[in-house]
Image 1 (cartoon, rainbow, N blue to C red):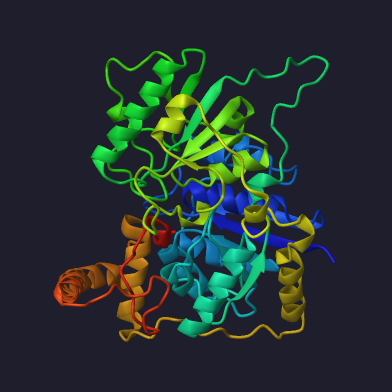
Image 2 (cartoon, helix red, strand yellow):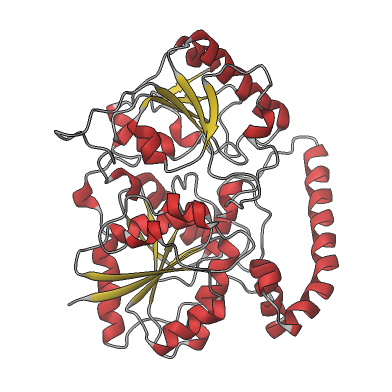
Length: 449
């Protein structure tokens, strides 16, 4: 049976992930995609880069990305002509809002699919909490599925988890040599920049310094700081110190800052360097040597715990010396390089669509148990949409809720300081979720996703 699936995306990384996941769907699925208007929605140039390399069902999006539409317009579209499923590929607050609206306002709702872009280890409670009413949560490694399933059980939420090969791994290089095309010359060491990892200005300046040293030591290289945005463009995670602003005036001529599709950069890469970008997985999948820098440590906040034991770890000294690695076989299978035959997300999605055909989709409860009724929902909508929410109730909720949220943040900060000052105190377990209904502070940018 032909299935019709609608993708809904917002930021740069979610747009890339959502579109490429759909592009990997069974060939008999009819695919549609819309972008949603939010404060962090991707620009048209970001969307063109995100949609580069899609299959024939979606390839038109790269040339002509859709204009953003409102959450209400998305819901009305689904009500008027319901697809079999909706893939919600957005930031957490937007995902929570849209999923809630589909449950509330669509009489015969579609199957709701969701997930997180790129690396999602270690499991984050907030990312799960905000998407708890989805039917299927797509992840990209066996390790992630185990971690999220355990976290869901501990937190008392009910989404099902499915495995999908990271969609950026499935494509061959975008510029395959032919009789009339010269093979691309691999001369670039590409640094996959992240907006907030590391976050401190001094750490980001140190990175630029190491890259400049590498460029000076190897004039035959092009050392490319590959970013996802130019000035004025939004990103999934906030960038306080853009690398373009940190480049010294005396930087080597072969050190540049560039944007564009990552796969195009990998076509010419002789190595990929990063702290914890998913681009490392893309590079390994294409046989490009990689280096994950550990000079700032290995921690949850740096999102690089997953690379421990991978064989790609190294330091600035390795970068400058040109020492790059490949992943160990024992790390691969549990971390993003499982056999494609083990992917079950499309089969499980179809099972849910069959249940929908029979009127058997469950009414999944929300993880949020907080009180407040319509005013609380208006607050969550305002948080998700910012200026794109023009409702009167949203304005009222903002006036009432902002000082309350500020007060709660101060109290949480005071509790953490008091707890850390107590003799023998230990930090809470990283993966232990708070009681259902509470909303813990984000511990890393990945939690925003």
